[in-house]
Image 1 (tube, helix red, strand yellow):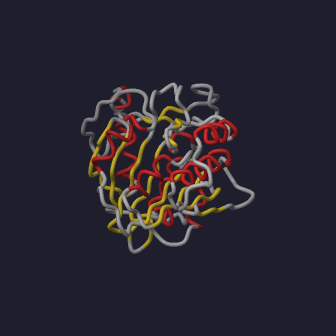
Image 2: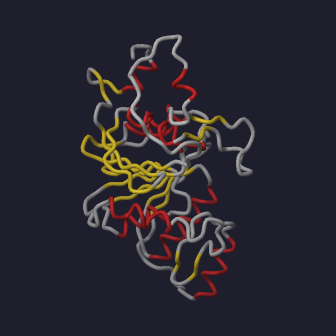
Image 3: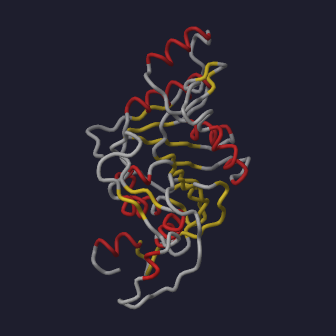
Length: 270
């Protein structure tokens, strides 16, 4: 997931010279297959998406959990893909939105989409493992549709946590498989107590050795209990669960003795 070069671009905030539907359709096709279906002045970018009108169908459930007015907010969209969520938060008045992704095709799509719609958004080719190199912290960090694509997901999440302002919010979304039940568990079990591991509701992450859904980047897929346990383990407090795969969190116990959990772990002092 390393990148050879960083590439950033800021939209002009002005629509392109032509808003002709035919010209937009041609450019959409030239930019390759889109995963985000975005309405570009009447031109859908992925009208035949296998998930339907995606990500709109997901955003409809999440939108109400975020403020309608984001004036002054700075936003980081990790794994921004074609820019749908970056656009939606910019629509709400966010002062600055930075989208990062490792796929240059998606970044080019996002740049075109924001220019076409007249929004000023920044995009960089950057891995989630490199978020620590981004200066400053953010009011809202979107970490959506990325976790299960990572070989080292918890390491990545612990890095992401450091980019959230103390009063900020994390919007976390992951594909889930297995049981959707959540139940209380003891904080500790003795060595010979193995029964909890037989329960489908015990926090579990499924490891994909080869591919799932024809995608070799699907590595670790949690059940619901594991997703919530991992968030809490990274020092986050779950505030809302607006739809099955999405949680709104805030930093709660992300530091111990003025140091982040990740730094303590990497130094062998956690």
